[in-house]
Amino acid sequence: MKRASMKFWAVALATIVVTTAAQAGDTIKVGFLVEMTGTFSDFGQHIVNGATAYIQQHGDTVAGKKIVLIVRDTTGPAPEVAKRLAQELIVKDEVDFIVGFGLTPNALAVAPIVTEARKPTIIMNAATSVITTKSPYIVRVSFTLAQVTEPMAEWAYKNGVRKVYTLVADYGPGNDAEKTFKAAFTKLGGEIVGSVRVPLQNPEFGPFVQRIKDAKPEAVFAFVPAGELAVGLMKSYRERGLAKEGIRLLCTGDVTDDGVIDALGDSALGVISTHQYSMAHDSPENKAFLAAYAKVDTKLRPNFMAVAGWDGMAAIYEVARQLKGDIDPDKAMQVLRGLKLDSPRGPIQIDADTRDIVQDVYVREVKKVGDHLYNVEFDKFVAVKDPGK
Ligand code: VNL
Image 1 (cartoon, protein in one colour):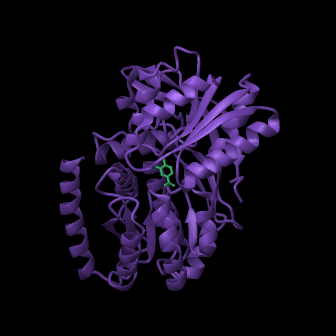
Image 2: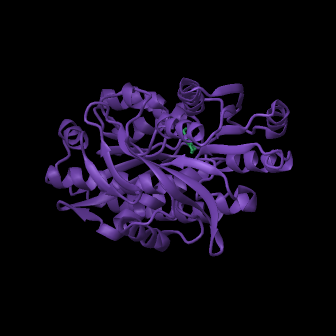
């Protein structure tokens, strides 16, 4: 997948690392632990693209220091690989920050290492609530599944939905989504008529989706990670004729992610989701982000991970400015706690106590605008904290 762009990154990164060695001392080094190959390779691409766009837009020097990116490929959900690469980034490369993490298992694996090394760590996607509790050196600029799921349960009930079947990927964020949806929806008076969990690797959606159809719920609530799983789920939903039976699809924005929405095709039209970012978000900050991103990658549509990559870099620039270029780990954490940013998604804040993100969560509908599908925002929940804490 994405062989051409992988090659591009291999070359670009080699160049960046060589430059680093020559200028150690005058640099702020940012080590990326991201998925650059395999099923989840888009995640790394999105995150690095977003960070690169930020640097190109704002200049590669801040507080007199040159920002240097060192990108390492975790290859997928691979905790042992993530741990080894984190050690190398800290000991050999002497990075000032560790960032990235498309996937929860990699973030959890690295938590004890960054605690031990006192290394400020910025989560740019991984979205299981518990991650930020695993180290005082972790902050999150992405989202949590609980944070975007609770609004979905409330919106569904308010709009007359009473019987829901849940489908989630069977790992941390999926379990959070299932638990949160069930709790919020039943508290309001709704009923969960069934729940399935599908494997993270190579799931066969057909039989699961058929089981849901046979149970005749009014809606399915679904979370699977963005990318290939989302495409697989949408395909089965269409092939098994759930929409025709009047079974609505309600999901987190991971399923209707901007990065794959073109591949979902018209079967995605009308799908309702809740999430923190849409390409269609109307603001000057988002326009600036989209313009900068388009100079970095013209093929892969930017998504919520790219925005988190952008915001994570914005956070690092702010730390650098406030610390006048001298990155002391504990002082950096102090700046990050409570930090506010005007993100392309809207205003965001890092909660000073939990180090987790507080942000608006939007309700969106997939619509065709011009030649492309977009998640068009039509309602929002303001300044949502992670309810999973
Ligand atoms: C995770 C969360 C991964 C949401 C995802 O796919 C996602 C995770 C990138 O925490 O592992 O959409």
